[in-house]
Image (tube, rainbow, N blue to C red; front, side, top):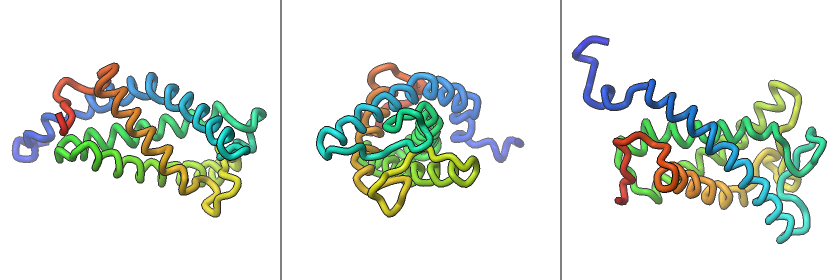
Length: 169
């Protein structure tokens, strides 16, 4: 990279910092979100009488350790959006939440679809959904997941770099 291409923004956002924080967040946040998913599925069953999503290839049916790959992917999506788009643009918190929720909702469908196409195994299925791998009520869960991600990474355990201050602060 020559001096002309080296902007203040590229200096401020080194890939090494991105990768280090991503690895840390995947180690800490992905398992917490997976546990949250288990409680969300239990809450869905308590309200509706059946599980909202099932794991047909899991011996447990209502949860799967294999879904941890999707949670690692969701942390990847949320951190990438934050690091390369939300924070540099100074987007407000609710804008971040809405965009990240929509991206992760689509990512859930893509992850489920790719799992079947690449491995022949289902990571998860929403039984009554025409979309199979995701349902429209899942948007509510993604909003809560993104809010919890934000609270955990910025306010509770500070898994963001020092430069990061929430746009609404």
